[in-house]
Image (cartoon, rainbow, N blue to C red; front, side):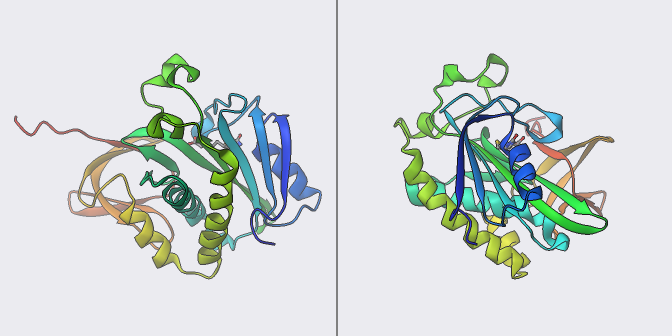
Length: 251
Ligand code: BTN
């Protein structure tokens, strides 16, 4: 089933990812979207809370069953879909930060949280969760994230018609998901790099549970891993968050 052909809308839930998982276990088909007006326990990456104010943001999860070897490319495909929808619906060129951040001028516009369930070593289902700041005013964001958050409304100075935006988002997501399952990794990686917040050779820090690692951005490999070079050696990351390292050019 094409993504977005079946949309289950709820007024409120703890997390659309949790609801999608429950429905997938109960037999809900690949492609079904769960859409909530509000989440009471929205989750972000690295165990963070995803602030989910009623009717201001997009809180959606899609049930998928990609080949498990391609899983680490799924957040990249999701980011490309949101970026296409922003371009088509609003004429905006947003940036993508590996692996799952959606940015506008280094401020956070949204993010993707993919969660997978395995039965033995076989993939049972995956849920692609998407959070996007749509009609927030600056004061709608909690103080601690206000300085680095942004919404489509703040960028465009206009109230966003969510349904028209979604009419662009589902076909874009279906298109990038098909690109993924057809094994066209190169297409996904090259497109992602063109829209990447980081450029080749730029200095960055990767924050992982084991600590921070500084090096130079050297792209993304076929499996969706981040390539970072330090002292002439390349290291690949599949988990982590990247930050800019501002160097003092004058010094
Ligand atoms: C991130 O930390 O950048 C990822 C945020 C993902 C938030 C979305 S909102 C819909 C879905 N349900 C959740 O609980 N989280 C994701």
